[in-house]
Structures are given as structure tokens and as C-alpha cells.
Image (cartoon, rainbow, N blue to C red; front, side, top):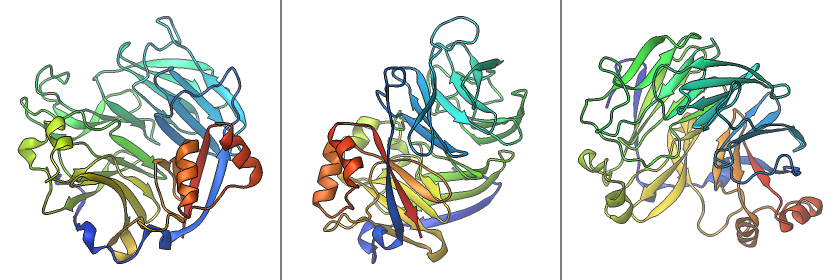
Amino acid sequence: MKNREGKEGIIDFNSCDADSFISDYVDSVSFTVLIENKANLIGTIDKIIVFDGKTFIGDYRHKTITAFSASGEPLFVIDKQGRGPGEYFHIQSFSVDSNHVYILDNYKEEIHLYSTVKGQYEKSLKLPYYSDDFESLENGGFILAYAPDGENDRRERGKRYRILVTDNKLRVTHCYLEYSESDKDAIGFHRYLNTSGNSVVYASFDSDSYYVFSRKDGIIKNTFSINNKSSLPLEQRSKIDFAISNTNFSYLNSVPFVCGDYVLFNYKDNSRIQEYLIISKENKIVKNSNDDYNNSIVGVIGSDDHFFICYWNKSIYNYMVENGFKRADNITEAYINDDATFLIKIYMK
């Protein structure tokens, strides 16, 4: 699909053409251990946002949002499961700005607002449209993302778009990426939106394109299509089992993460999923080395304008270090060996 607004670009991609590696563009690496206690234990990390020096972690299975300082000290936990006022029944996604932590709750059909200072509840907004993901905008509005299933369409006629942009009253101001009533997206993506600085990035399994929106007002800025001769055909995009099992086709496997002039994306290239990095200022794509894991970028779950954020467990850390990745300092490594939750920040040149 092509959008008529914003600039469009084609990224010709052949994984065999990489003439340099991701490590050539990495400046430095740092480790942050997240200090946990009984009140803020993290089960899974489904989404991570770094904002104003704080790190916010969404654990959807346990229905919590946990905030940490830049050094990993616990700040507060939003744990308001329930059906009453100020409570949410489900976390579909969350977003953060300077004033609020926003929780998307499709079951209660609301967006709940909590303070970014101590996590206390403030108010809820009635959600007009079911959404699979969302992000808050600087003007107080929202971007609402949706993946149609071709059967029980939750969008009313006239609002059948994958992206709806709203104002702060949740009134629709812009619509992007119209779909037909019969369109069906495979549930291939865990999430559909990522934020970085002043941009919001959207992608879904229906194509190998990604879209960049302004976080100021939700206006689309750029559209990029990843062009590969072995790309999964459009008519097969609703069949996730076929895509996973078939080794003849390639496809974008998740929403890209943006860090300044760098765009990192996971791509299934025949039978293997790998990380690739777009160097925008050089108009090229590079990948991790297969022989030396020093400064490799693996397991990205977030980003900002200066770094990518990776999440590993102890086993992955040991494997990466054994193959050339920078070892953490002794104190941090002791925490890692004790199965502490930790993050890796990959700072780019």
C-alpha cells in the first residue's frame, strides 16, 4: 500500500550485499541492572520506553507498568488491575509523555491516565475505536493502530483505516492506510508502533513497508518500502503459519526501531531471522558479523535518539561474551549471574 502524503522511498535489500557490519557504527555499550523488590518484580518486558531519564517497562502478562531511574533504581509501579474507577482490566499497550503514563484498555474501552511522577491515577478517556496499539502525541492526541482480521471488523464503515490520528478529545483528525472489509492481517506482530524522539514508526505484517509519523501532530512524514526479490507475496500475508514454515520467502518481522539516522529492523531472510541496520546518511544496509559479536546489536526492544535498548537473559549474555561482546564490569556481572533483570544500551556514532 502507498500513502499519498509524505515522502516515499524504496530500500533495495539483498542480505548478501552487506560490505560492512553493524559494529562499525557502534560508539559504546553500557549495562543497567534494574533493582527489583517484592513490589516491582518484572515477569516479562513487552515494551520499554525511555523518557526524561526514566525507564518505563510494560509487563502485560502481570498487568503492570514499572518505572526506574536512569541508574536502575525503582521509582513506582502502576498495578491497578480491576473493574472499578481508576483501574484497568487489561493492558493492550502503553505510552508516556512528560505528564502521563497512558494505558490502552480495550476491555473497558478506555485510555487510562496516570502521573509520570508517582504513578497515581488521574482520569480515563472513552476509547472510540478498538485499537491493537497506540501512541500519545505532543499535542495531546493519539495515534491508534489497527490490524483487521477480515471477519469481525471492529471499525465502523467510514473509519476502516489501519491508522487513525485523534485530538486530545479522541476525535479523529487524520486517517491513513485504508483497508477493505475483506482484508485480513496475520497476527504476526507483537506491536505495531515504536517511538523515538519526535517520530512514531508504524509497520504491520500486511507489507514490507514502514511509515514514519510526526509525534508532534501525527502527520505522516515518510514511507519506506523494503524491496527484496524473495519478499512474501501479498496474497500470502494473511497466513502466518505459511510464512513461518516456508523457507523460500522473506519478510519484515517486526516494527523497525529508529535511533537518529539509524533504523534497525528484524527480517526473515529465507529460514533465518536477522537484525539489519539502515544507515540513512549513507543509503546502505549492514548486518551483524557472523564471526565476531563485539558491538553486535541483538534483542532490541526500544530506542531513543542516541541508543538502542537490548534485553537479554544470563544465557544470551554469556553466549555473546564468549563470542566477542564486551563483558560487563564485575559488579554488574555478579548481578547478571544472579539472574537480575538488566538492559544493554548500544550508543551509536
